[in-house]
Structures are given as C-alpha cells and as structure tokens.
Amino acid sequence: MFPLTVENKHVAQLLLSTGTCPRCIFRFCGVDFHAPYKLPYKELLSELQKFLKAEEDELVSEIPNPPPKKIRLQEPEDQIDGMDSLSQNGEGKLSVTEDGSSSSKNSNLNVCNVCLGILQDFCEKEFIKKVCQKVEASGFEFTNLVLSVSFPPQLSVREHAAWLLVKQEMGKQSLSLGRNDIVQLKEAYKWITHPLFSEELGVPIDGKSLFEVSVVFAHPETVEDCHFLRAICPDCFKPAKNKQSVFTRMAVMKALNKIKEEDFRKQFPCPPNSPKAVCTVLEIECAHGAVFVAGRYNKYSRNLPQTPWIIDGERKLESSVEELISDHLLKVFKAESFNFSSSGREDVDVRTLGNGRPFAIELVNPHRVHFTSQEIKELQQVNHFMTWKLSCFCNSVTELELLIVFLFLILQKINNSSNKIQVRDLQLVTREAIGHMKEGEEEKTKTYSALIWTNKAIQRKDIEFLDDIKDLKIDQKTPLRVLHRRPLAVRTRIIHSMETCYVDEHHFRLYLKTQAGTYIKEFVHGDFGRTKPNIGSLMDVTADILELDVESVDVDWPPALDD
Image (tube, rainbow, N blue to C red; front, top):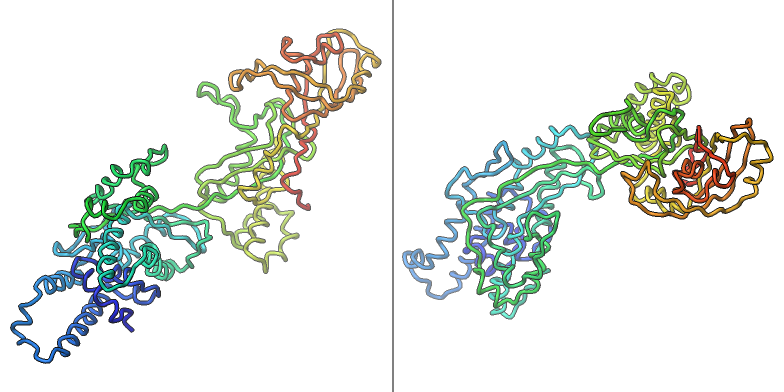
C-alpha cells in the first residue's frame, strides 16, 4: 500500500518538482514505517509518479467541462518538466569505484537536492555489496556489528531549507510542520540498509556490538553551503584540536537552531539548488572496541625491567615484563597494539613476590574475540596437564565460558614460556574497572623486604629500635636516579612499620610496610641527604641496599580467581 495520502499530495508534488527524491519526500511527509523506504529506487519513483498522476486525473475529472487534451498537455510546463527530470532518476545508475568514491553512469541523473544522493543509490544493493566486500577483506572476525555513517554537515542546511519551504506552503493551508515531524536521514538510511547489510554479511546489526563499520560521506561541490552560518553565528563555530574543520554537524545544527528564519532565507535558497554530482565515499573503515585483560604478575628476575628499557634508541635488555605478557595476548587476539598499565612499578633489579602486582592491558582493535572448542583443544596441546581438567567442560559451554577457558590457557602458556615471571588471576575487565587499580594509589600500602649493608659492624641490639618505630614521616626529594623523568619536588611519605632480622655484623634484613610511592632504596641510603630521615641517619652509619623485594601490593583488584 502506497504510504502517501491525498493530504500529502501538495507537499509531495512541491518537493518532487524542486528536485527532491522520493525517499526524502516520504521523510518530509512523516512516513515513519520502514517498508516504503525499502522498495527499489525505480519502483519507488514509479509508484510516486502513479500516485501523483492518479490524484491529478481525479481532480481533472471533477471539473464539469475539462479543457481539451491538447490544451492540458501544454499547461503547467514546470510541473511536466519536474516529472520528466525526476523520471530520469530511475534511469541513472551510480557506481562505486575501487577507492570507495561514487560516480554517475548517467550524466542526466537528477541528484536529490536534499540528501545529495544518499537515499538514491547509496542504500541500494550494489553499494551495500561494495561495503561488505571491504568488511570481509578487513580480517576481523565478528558475530554482529554496528553500522556508523557520517554525512556531510551541509545536508542539515539543505534539509533546513526544504523544511522552511514545506512549512511555508503548509501554512497557507493552515497546517504546520515541526522539525521533529521530519524523519531523520540517518533513521531512514538505517531502515533501508540494516537488513541489507545483515543479509549480505550473515550477522545481525546490534547497536551494542563492539565491532563497528563506519562509512564517511562527503560532497565537495556543496561544501560551502555552511559557510554563511559562521558569519551570522560565529560563537557556534569554535576551532577544536581534534577536528579538521569547524563545520561539524553539531556546530551546524547549533547555528540552525539559533538563526532566524528570515536571515536564513536571505542567505540560502529555499528550495535548495540541485547539485550536479552525488556524494563521494571518503572512507570505509572497520574497527573493534578494545578488549581489556587484567591480572597480577610475579617477577623473579633481578635483570628484567617492567617496560622495554631503551636509552637513546638503544635497547639495554632483550625483554620486559610487559612484553612477556602482552606478546601472547596480541597474537591470540590479533590486536594491532596494546597499552600496559600497573599499580606502581619495580626497578629492573627488584623482584615482585607474594600475590603479585596488579596490571591491566588494553588490546587495541583486536581482530578476533571469539574462540571455538576446537581452538581450545589445540591450545591444550601446549598445556598437556590441563587437558584432563577441561576435556569434559569444553563439550557444551557458552561463548563467554569459552573465552574464560581460553584466557586461562593463555595464562598457562605465558607461565610456561619464561621462568622470569608468572601471571595469575588473568581475566576480562571493563575500561571502567581499571580505574579501581589507580584509585587512591598513594593511600595504599606496600610491603617490602630489603637486605641492608652497613659500613660499621653492628650487633642485634643496634637494630632492634627500628622495630618500635611506627608511622614515621619522611621527606623525599625526587631521587637523582629518576630526576630525568620525574619533576623536582619534595614528597612526604609514611613508613608504617619496620621489622628487622639480624644476619651478621655488616648485614641485616629489613621488612617494611610503607605508603605507596615511597622510594625504598633512598630511604635506606639517604640519596646524599635528599631523603630525611633515612636508615643511615637513624643508625648513625653509612647504609646501602643490596637486594630489594616487593612482598605485597595491597590493592584489592583484580578479584582473585579460584585455581
């Protein structure tokens, strides 16, 4: 059933005669159900012409003495011309070139003066197939997707002009048309293209999907349509660092809501002029939302930095904690890159023991996030001792459970690949959850053990007084060894408690519980007086630290997982 009624006839004829496409006519007539928009363009144009012709014939038949046919055919030439020119829309065809741009195969194609061709051929099957070919060639694995389209901002200006035209004409009939009564271009485009994309790719369109296909349109011919708005509403167009142009859709819409109708009409034609060419496609891009993996790591080597150690472009050590963990995750998830963060960091010669240090890895643009039972079985071959535990479990599980099992097997692979680190509690987390790792870092506590040397011979009684010191406040000027990467400042830190263990007359072990962010090495040797007080000054000796271990990082995140 054709969606327009006799009440829509005048608006439809007006828009048609000024160069507006059938689908945009539906939008301005408030057609808010999907089916009519989905009809092929030629069929849609034909149905619209039949509807208008039928209405015209009905009006003619009501005239008592209709004029001869010859006279009728010579009458409203502008109306006939409009019909003829628009009938050419059904004859013309748009093609998508290899670089994604579009061109007309018919120089007589009448491009819609409102949507600039978006609702003419960019929602037809030929274009959809071109986009899907690029998606399939991208290498992403996905089970659903979200489609994102970016239209030229001047479309809003042209729609505003058409709205003012229709509004004026309807006002003559004591009718009204609000901006919100018009079906949005993106809505109409979504109604038409979502089923086509879903059918072509074989997956549903899901607004919550992390896999996004974005199509960016441009129309160089009409790019200056927006420029007059900046002169009238300069406060709406402010430069932004991450924007190439001040004429963003939001800025244009803000100006259109602010400008007076009479000022707009003086600056821009109503109806808008018909363009010579359709839009071009600037880019078709695929991207997957980041995957976040968190856990805890133990570091057992005194010759392993947390992150790659590179000075003046020269790599000092062959690996790092970050790389030993992330390399496996990057390979499995086929991510383009990663970002590593942790709750504090240890020096290259410091071990991290106990329950380990919390860390999180952001896997940027992963090309796969779905795994099968077969892939799990293949990974189990590397982890033979796990096979008997999981062989029954993998027979019937949900996709999330498969991913959890897969992460556990990756953990085992990481741990088997190096004796320098071990990982535990590896799990998927959200971006927001990572904030828990950083929240109140300086209020957290950390526990250390240090092997200390003194220049003077000591006895057990010489160190026992340290056990009685509680909540000792110290002032630490930025250590010399980190001054090249940290600002110069004096930071007050608290040594909550200390416990000593005598070794021999020049060595003892010191266990400390301190405020996070305390420089332990400097607290021991004083850093040439930059940390006050320090172990050396408290004992009236020259002290130095030979070994340091992080025994615990008291951050209750990520949640511990059962073995």
